[in-house]
Each structure stands twice: as C-alpha cells, then as structure tokens.
Length: 246
Image 1 (cartoon, helix red, strand yellow):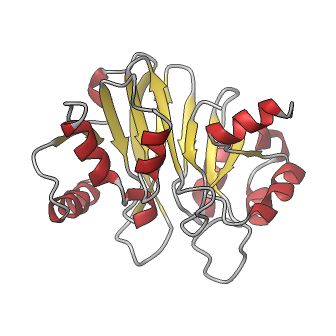
Image 2 (image 1 turned 90 degrees about the vertical axis):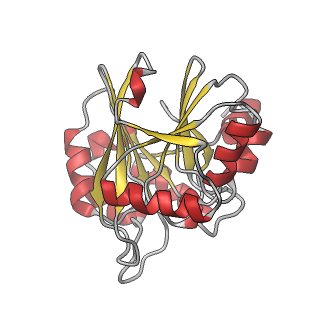
C-alpha cells in the first residue's frame, strides 16, 4: 500500500473516521482530503512532526472531506510557521474551496500550487484531478491520480462512476494501485459504489491492486476478502494486525 490512511470510513462511520490518506516523502507530505475528524487524528498520530512542507488535495466539498481543512491550515501557520499548499485543480473547484476558506476566516495563510507540487517531491511527479459522478447536490466531484515515475496511484474520492472505475481497472499496470470508494449499502440512486457492483467492474486478475475505502459498515469486510480486494487499512489497523500476527 503506497498511501497511508488516517481514516477510512464513510461520513457516518465515526469509528473509522473520515476517509483521508497521505503520502510522505522525506519532510514533504501530501494529504488527500481533510474531513471533520481528520485534524484531531493528524495531531494525535504526530503525522506532521517531520513535515516542513504540507500539501493538501481535496476531492469535493462535502464536510467529511473538507471539514477540518481550516484547522489544519491554521495549525500549520501558527504552530509550524508554514503556509499550507493546496493543490490547484479545475478553476470552479478552486473558486468554491477558496470561498469556503474565506468564510471560515482563513485568509493569506495558504497558497495554491500547480499539479507538479512545486517540484518539491522527488518520486511524486504530479497530482491531477479527474471529474467523476457522485451527487448532483455538488457542482462537481473529482478523483485524484498521483503520478510517479514508474507507478500511478488512483484515489477515487466519493463516486458511483462505473465508467471511471472500469477504465482505471482496465488500465492498471503491474505496480499501480487503485483506492476506491466502496460501500455495503445498495439502493437506487446510490452515490457510492456498492461492493458487489465493484466486483463486476474489476477483472479478477486486477483485484489485488484495488483497496476499498470509505467503508460504511464493517459487515462489508468479509465481502472484500471474498472478492479478492484489500481494505485500505489505517495505521492503527496495521499495528493491530501485526500484534496478532495477521
């Protein structure tokens, strides 16, 4: 697993925390999404201790994906003495995010950076956004692709976009990884991806490269194993597994 997860739950799964991941390289960190519960988890886990540059990429503006971004920006500026870099995406998304930060009182203490992340990372070359379907209540939602020299990391954000999922699954190279919104819930108009539907979209030979995230119900875990996918485990879950030898 290339990404480390701070939380891997859906909006209402408070036990697992909001879905958020990060990539750490030396003293540079890129955080993907920053929902309501994430700032507390970041501080308690000391994730930022070694970071002197912090980048953030936001998939969409639901509160479980952006709710504690203002707190993170404030903390970086007033406690660490650094400005947070927000990865620039489509203009409309940046405009809406900037408005949200402005009405939260966040002014002049962050900046936007291009998809090349100011060339700050050695192995990570760029972070790009792809529009995906999620809910019509939002202007747009996005998936994120992290482009490395010999690897791509796909992070779906929240989506029910079957065309996107199928395309990513078909294009997965040997070292690529796909982190996909996965839920147990199954109902007409579902704005997330049901686990059974995911299994019809991803060929059997590619499923070991797919990590299920944004978990709504732990009853889904057996199905994740059954279909040959992985769970995008948090650091706490990884440590527990190591303690019990699993």
